[in-house]
Image (cartoon, rainbow, N blue to C red; front, side):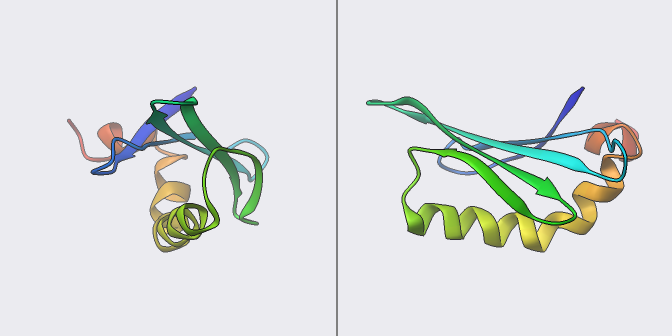
Length: 89
């Protein structure tokens, strides 16, 4: 199951999985006129990035900074049913 975590001003969606065997998949996707969607995957806690498509180096560095700064929350929410469940909405 994937849980919504954050939507950035450029419509980039960041979602994450439940924690399985101590790992969490974080997936980012941004609408793009030419490519349809840019996307990238990061695995926490090791912050291993793969399947990067369409993003520039500058864009990936920006996404890496976001994931790194929010990793503690993503890891917590991955064990409690996502952000909406953790915030009791």
